[in-house]
Length: 149
Image (tube, rainbow, N blue to C red):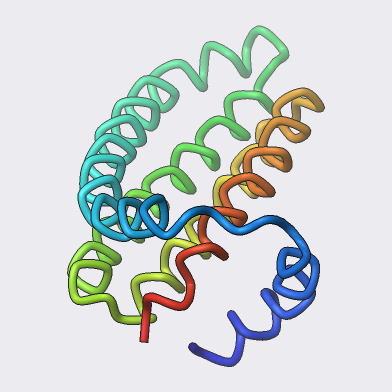
């Protein structure tokens, strides 16, 4: 595991160690499907990010004229973050398939990017949802962490 990921996950790992563990069959299933989910969601994120970026690029001038340009800019930045998430998921696929820790690290950073994307969207509800999603997502990541060497 790289040093940056260890630094960020240390506190989380200490907290999550106290939570109940998933059954072995559940963790085995997660490890088996994780590469394919990363591939599918990576492709979907890239396609969605490109579509959002294209639409927002066209509508940004209109939004600026309407006085809501800051939302268009935030949307453009969020779509770039979504593209980055998709690329990270696609990069994680081969490592997850080979059960290397690099794949796990990439999934972790993709999870972090999802929170960043929500913060950029400037919506309190979306940030709260993203934090809850991160906490649940990290629970599953923590449960399968030992499978990746």
